[in-house]
Amino acid sequence: MSQAASNPYANTGKWILGTAGLVVGMIHVGGVTRLTQSGLSMTDWSPLGSLPPISKKDWEKEFDRYKLFPEWQQRKSMTLSDFQFIYAWEYGHRMLGRFVGVAFAMPWMYFTFKGRIPKGYQKRMVGLLAMGGTQGMVGWWMVKSGLGDDRRDEKREIRVRPVRLTSHLSMALATYGALLWTGFDILGIPQEASIKDQVKKLSKDALRHAQKLRSTSLVLAGLTFCTAASGGLVAGNDAGRAYNTWPTMGDEWIPSEIMDLVPWQRNLTENTATVQFNHRILGTTTAFTALYLVGAGLSRNRGMLLTPQARNGLYAVGIAATGQFALGVTTLLTYVPFSLAAAHQLGSVVVFTSGLYLAHSLRYARPALVRAVVTSSISTSASTTSRGVTATVAQVAASGAKAV
Image (cartoon, rainbow, N blue to C red; front, top):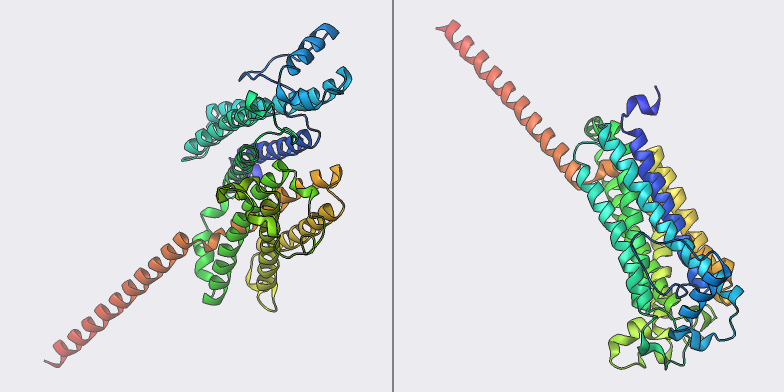
């Protein structure tokens, strides 16, 4: 039997996962836009966008507008050709965002009309659309932080504010995670009907093992999200080009400059030493959590207690986390080359994806379902016992009547 035949919502789930894939592309293009220092090339924004400059006169007009803003003061050697290059990346990033919005909204209307949105999922769709729309506004809020007159006297390279860059990246990751989980949920609808019966067949040891792994995989996904967000602060401060040693930071394990800024809160978002130190700690913690998860999940005789999907998820977590950790260290030691920096950002998405996939593959161990199964088993056992006692009393009464 085909998947479409067994699950009438299969195409809906595939569409959601396809949209999630587009968001990954959006994250990657956003990373390249930052690495090419293209983010401040467009100095205005409208929700629906506009056509790019076409003629040379149009380009010169756009270039003249760019020269009115602070970044031009530091890039006066830029030619029109250079400007066209950075403008193309920013324009492509914005238009890809709008394309993702259309790729979500249009099929949603179609599947709604065809009755192919599962019951109870329309609110999720509204939430996903709202997250996507909010992402566009957060993006412009981020860009505006690099265009204000208050940036004109800065001696450091003018960039968008690190906190706003991190907010933009975090919103994209959250949207991606919500899309991914929703797609998994919809594709897993046929299994939901029998999942309680499957749980009843599991031994207590297998169920405890699955519950432990599920909770740890959710912790891993959360750690990966926080590590990626901290990477936004590293990128926003260009902190990857400092302390290019491992495992120490220069000659120190904890850099002495870690609390140099006043008030102290600024160190968490603006201090190069602090943001890189935090990113290292989070990245290392994420890697060790992943290795612990794989070791605990696939240890001798334990791996056989899991479903094939859960075992595949553990393999994916181990490979992705190990590769991402090695890639991060290599990127740092080689002074953040363009290709490795872009790959490192994508690697965080891969680890995040593997963590969510593993957690979802262990959904049969979610607390609410286990409680429902245990409660049902207790009720069934009590009912059976009650029927047994009633039958016994009836037999004794019958025997007594015969004796009389």
